[in-house]
Length: 217
Image (tube, rainbow, N blue to C red; front, side):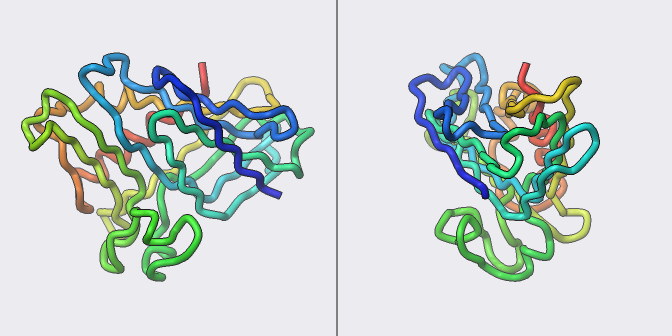
């Protein structure tokens, strides 16, 4: 049985889930923000995690086919607890970032795929795989706002990304950093500050975002 753990923290420098002992998660997603918070001010970080598989010594110990919307806005972290493998040492994970083409062409769904979550464009474009919004003084747009709404499922515009991560030793908790500092370090935000439709630019940013998922240091 999947249990979702949500905890509120006070600082943004490195958001990390804190779980109660009885709700110890098997996997944690930690948001690492850019160091210069005066320059880049994050307001929204949301992404879909799907087809999550957990492994121990190369053996699949759990697979979760549910679509989970991670809402990592300032001060919020999310972890997942799977009671079925609470005693297993997990050493690797594989998952998708986004919503696959089959689900996208099925139209609007419920739960975390409900359009009211603000992550659905339309049948033609499907779901937004991840969304990053905020402000930066370098951005020449109104109110210095930047917006990355990244999605697309058709052909060369398919922005779905698969991430595989491994540890040398197994652990009861698999801790994963989402290093947005690396995402922004490779972008000239004064020029590339608004990507809102599927296309080559969205695919490029999707690959960069997937590269930000790393085992916690």
